[in-house]
Length: 252
Ligand code: BTN
Image (cartoon, rainbow, N blue to C red; front, side, top):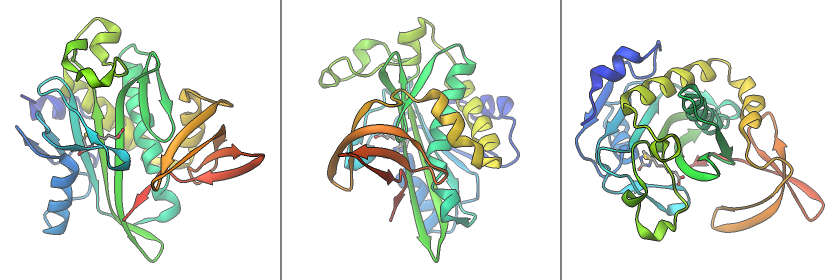
């Protein structure tokens, strides 16, 4: 059970999370958010959260596993039009806000481009941003955040091969998921208000500066040296002596 009022008590935001829709179980908070947008029921800044996500969507068409009542699965809905160059920074801003929330609770998180959240080098969280755009503006955007909080090692499927971790595994303590949710939403709003500074701050948490990275984009696999992030939020990757920018945003 997620207690909405516990999130609300700890929130320090003006817009994000002013409306929270909680579902005991749901296929996917991102899918539900699209349904609300498509039926004109979505409000800018609303948060969709569930205690048991049955068919969570991950990046690159993967699925996202959530341990019921232990993990965090939520989506933030933005419906105010935003210029594309700003929208491109939102996935990074979301990852940064999760990293800052974990840091605020005594962890040492790192970020793997585009937005994996790691503790001790193992995946603890991920972000799936989906958006619709026309004429240079993103008109609606859904920021889906999945975070492992109170799982123990036996809660993850065997196929994860010990590559996933959680806040509880790394700190030895459990924590109220509502508190983490409120803190990350509070950071997210602050970062969105000053989006330009987010690339610099993101790099402070980067797990692989000047290191060899491998990633998938649009069904293709790329590998190269990670050089940094430009002001559009694109990763600068050096592949065969040529530096290229790769966006982290998924546009429908
Ligand atoms: C990744 O592949 O790393 C991204 C995972 C994103 C998972 C979250 S959980 C809440 C939201 N709803 C979904 O269906 N997916 C995202």
